[in-house]
Length: 116
Image (cartoon, rainbow, N blue to C red; front, side, top):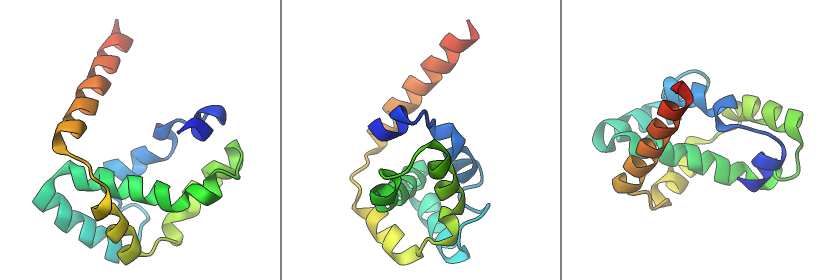
């Protein structure tokens, strides 16, 4: 997160497409179908876990890159993702629904502040 801040990378620059399409926009079909299966069983928590797993797996490379290279890397990331290791990593992330709900409320409050 600190590296992204230093490089002025906002999560909306890459994650919006991933989340709005539930990964169908450019990720391998094997990953997409498994994410959707877990999404139907667990809800948004699994979608966020996958995003965190993707970033965690890519962090060694991302930490070496600058702004433009980070955006290019994230644009091409779906072409290199392997479903099983990514999902295995996602399931190991201890993300509770209560935490997801907390961040959702924080985000909604920020959006409300922007409107005023």
